[in-house]
Length: 113
Image (tube, rainbow, N blue to C red; front, side, top):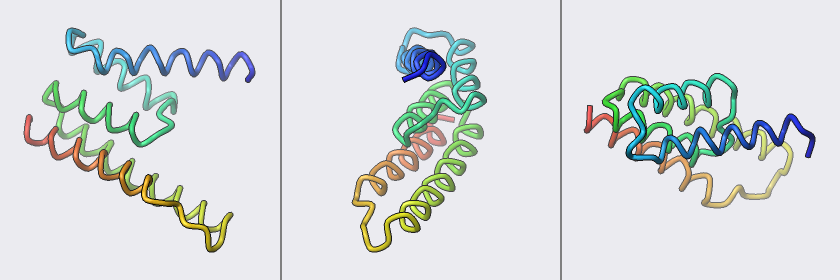
């Protein structure tokens, strides 16, 4: 792993930790979400669901829904790429479970908004 990848991983871990910190200020959480999305550091649907949940906790349900829609589109694109590269090989249920986390987080965010 090169130094750039290590730095990105370190940044991602620190920013995601902020999302899970219930004592973090609204400003720091929103900044963490912005950096994660702007820098393309969200590599899994679970990380996207964490961002969506954090947005919901801070009554930013509109932003949570936008991120959820982007995640759903990304999930579809990933599945299509997988199917093109691996014809006849199932992606398994994990992608469905991950997308369910994103949708569940978005619904909860809207409920809190």
